[in-house]
Image (cartoon, rainbow, N blue to C red; front, side, top):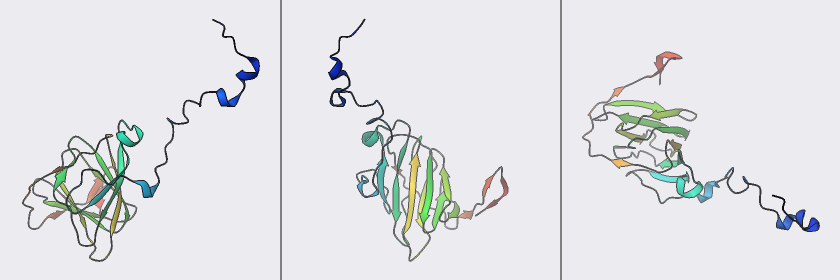
Length: 170
């Protein structure tokens, strides 16, 4: 079916619709506009950047976490979500397991992977420097389930092992 358009009006930019990706495409979230109203764990400050509510993310949650010197989070897990932590500044010590009986450390530039339902705790290994990290999770909503765990007295250090580093690394 043909549409009758006023020829002069048809090319008037003021009357054209926005391109489809203009407001539904790439989003930039300024670092000073992160949302601090997210589920947190004692000992850490989380802020959300990418969520379903903020940008319509269906399968991702991303934000930041800051842990003050010598501080640690409570034991927790993130339900069915997978998590990735990227260390920006400082030294992260992770403990995990049913009694937080395993430990490993990561520094600036390192990535940490936390599988679903794994009880864990983030610790700032530095007595003087703030630990700053970027977090990404596999869902548009934040999930944090705090746990009441009696931690093992002396955790076992575990080397990171993967197919390209079969002997591990710390």
